[in-house]
Image 1 (cartoon, rainbow, N blue to C red):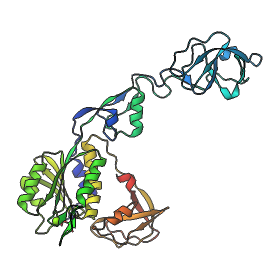
Image 2 (cartoon, rainbow, N blue to C red; image 1 turned 60 degrees about the horizontal axis):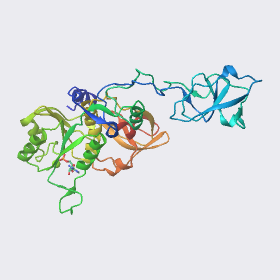
Image 3 (cartoon, rainbow, N blue to C red; image 1 turned 45 degrees about the horizontal axis):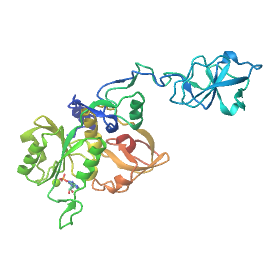
Image 4 (cartoon, rainbow, N blue to C red; image 1 turned 30 degrees about the vertical axis):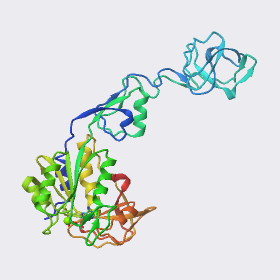
Length: 395
Ligand code: AMP
Ligand code: MG
């Protein structure tokens, strides 16, 4: 009996707990890291009322249609401390400069006429115009970012805007990866008889890099029980282990046996296509994922199961991807046992599926925009509505 995908995910995520370990780092190194504590501002941003324009600043109580000509009593540049505005005068002011005491409006210079050392103002001036009030962006005491937030460029800018230079983040995860398969050759080396290039190793490393996870690369593992156990033991130092290949039912598939002997296998065989033989368990309490060897299966099972697990481990508030319903522009036959994920291209509101959906065809993943989810037993004809998961939602 194959395990339904949602049950598998629920069971797997029940084992996911954040590492609860933190480090202090510079905001310059914090992109993509997960905040370890709420960030509360100790200041107002901006710290004082300031001018939104280059122009003249006055007290509106002194201006009237009959009194529009003012002597210019000071020049206030950004970064300087203004004197209180003298009675019945205007001050020259520039964008970002602090509003002086006694003043309450800025008139943009394009609306003013200069007459020697005087300025003639327009008649229509409103209290507060062109003034950016103190604290309009952030008020002292505001929580600007929450623990568990994955830091984006705008967040780093926001932290800088309240003067924070170092922050507490969850420490980087360390994930061990190993590639099983006697057929594997590394890119850059000649391809000899019977061999194929190892693509999963680089696919996984890249996914982990995107998650800012340190990779412990155990390398390629020979298809023997002894070698598989030896490598898995080495990997158990990490926060999580991911292997590829060797989880199916062939005589050369030793991963399940090795995991069972060293730890525990909690789950195996999911109602999923591609990716049925996914295995999950632990080795000496280090969580273990055995991903199927076909590159598209590795791709899909990583995104559906491993990525959410790792996000939670690194302290993030995991939210399932958002899907949308779009119109199929393809046929599929019903699969009575497994939910299928088809590689599709989106053309406006329609989805075109690649004709070859083999789990070995990685080029279609590169060309696709996302995945169409076909439930167990559903046959799809052109015009049917199908669930679409764009890659932008998945990683
Ligand atoms: P396995 O699960 O070990 O039976 O592998 C399933 C298929 O995936 C086989 O055709 C393997 O050659 C292929 N495969 C396994 N590991 C990799 C890898 N690291 N890179 C590319 N293909 C792989
Ligand atoms: Mg193999």
